[in-house]
Image (tube, rainbow, N blue to C red):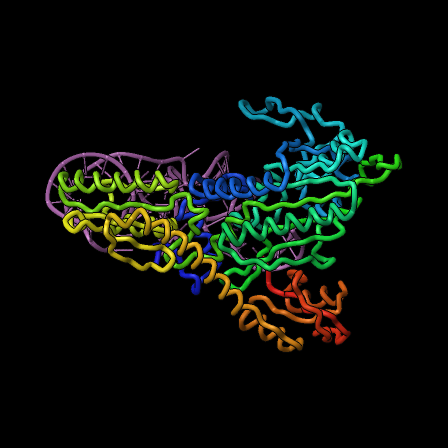
Length: 492
RNA sequence: CGGGGCGUAGCGCAGUCCGGUAGCGCACCUGGUUUGGGACCAGGGGGCCGCAGGUUCGAAUCCUGCCGCCCCGACCA
């Protein structure tokens, strides 16, 4: 067990917070609700960006950048969206400070520098983007517009948690405009598939694809699709959303185009996003009481080499081998760290790199030099094996693949175990209370019932799975007829 | 916004009840011995005790005001 970190069973929430800090991913900043993402944490984000950005480009999207500030009148143009975010908006009201005449060296807000119109710090960018699209779109020939932006947004949350919910966070937001409803819906679905593929292939995180109920829908959207993941404490986490906006924003910002028949039509829209919250998901889904477990495809460091030695002479001989191994692996495209610090003992380094979740560790000492071997340890299972040096170049890449796959399989079987079908409200409450996880149950489809269940149990409908099969049943709460099961859970 | 807690070395804390001029662990620096699972010994450096005012011969400690942070709740796409 890692030093200074409680185990998951002792205190899951605290385990998470401490792990984030001790593994050097992020820390609380001097600004309330905002975090500092440290280099090691940021490099995981960079890996995610890299993979996602390629997937976006491969599906025809391009990147652009829109302003951080949104004039209040522009922000409120799409009423539902504005209303939904109103409670958590930060505002810029002044543009100048001045010296405080009463306290030397201090600054006060210059009352003469009040803005004519307040600026909203974007909680999301639909408003500014659609007001821009209006200028870009006249004809069907201007469509579709397929733009993504990597940006920060601010949502003034009352309670924050590193990565999972902070006042400012990093994300990407795609905003597309289309000539037809069908095309926009296809885009919404396509991006959901992209997110699901990213989660499963790169994060080794199995996700449920589904649609949100009316209560949970993005304000301003006609339909919200999502991917939902299961964390080790049995709580669900929304890992990404893709929204079909209909013509809501086109109406609000008067974005019309001439179709082939020369008739004016309103543009159809989508938006979709994932955020640094994914790092929280990654940690909570895979890591253990010894520290992080990072899937190889997102690990900033794939392999760490730890030397074991007594004398300077031994250190030199071990280093020579270690550098050669590192060089060969790097040639294959792997990120390799040779931890040649002579200020820390091997045992310390083992623990430290385990805390940081490096998938594979190679230890090499005098004994190995004599035998032509190394000790290879894998982070996910903590198994060690002695390996011939000449096998490293083929065995380590294979091992990384195995680890990626194993982490996924483990998360998948956990989720399967943590998904329970229930057919009565009594059973529902019992499972929720004793076991947690996803609960698959019939629901009458009304917002009222969902609200009642939430009030009584704190569980919400995470999604209506896309692959839910038609099955006649009755709502566990109201007893009214239902045609398919939905997934309930306690959620982050 | 309600309830609770906390601000003392880089981090974690004791000292506050009962006032006497600041201490422990980790980290850090130096030297030595160590090095295949979180080393050990010796020496050393580091503090507007959150801020401001008051009481007192004397305040980390008592009083007043302020600021900040954390936890629980409400809130949360």
